[in-house]
Image (cartoon, rainbow, N blue to C red; front, side, top):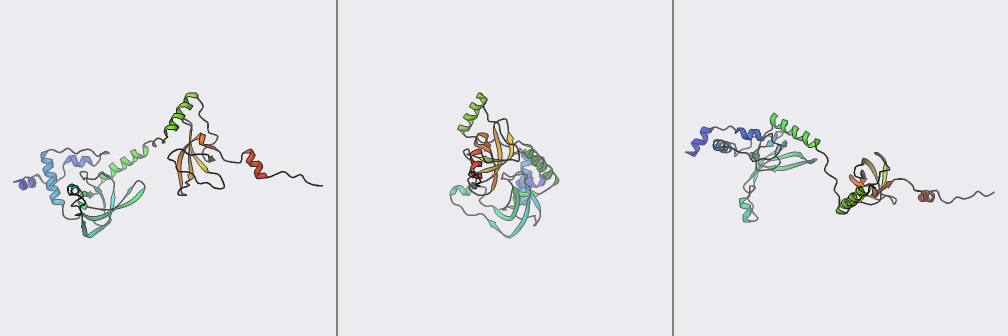
Length: 258
């Protein structure tokens, strides 16, 4: 009786699932009884074979049990011998959504600035359609428009900034964008800069006059790679010889002999 009821409902996706494709957040999808039964019969029809080919652009279906919804993926490989997940390390694994999956495609996606590849189950995906792309482009535009996250501060730095603001003695920068500065010290959690010939330097990217900080490009002393970071102006000074150092560079003045 149940099978005949499912068949009578047809195999089209419920409207709530179609609408969920455009959602920015993963919200619970609410379906009525008929829609739930229709979704189940569609699942029974779709399961068991891979409808995709290498080069297809696909996307996780809106009711997939994974989190990275809405991101386009490309099929790199359709496995001739799918990999079933049948190994368990504990009894809890038997109730996991991962247990029993049949990984039959390898896909690539671009996430957090990195091209990543994964073995996945094709049942969790659907073809990339214009409505997917519209929603994805809108989400990317919103993400790009978001302000940069606040610069992290230690407790000591927060207390010092509050006291400086109260006393009106925030240090004004003596530099501007594109100039070099010397890094005298670093805050908690910052990568220490690389030292060369006794100095640590950075290139000014941005000056924030509202809180007495400067954003620099500099070489990490740990990796040697160039990165960016915010520094309190009190931890920086203008790059260049200071009077005593300049004299040392010039050397002693020798009077000419006659």
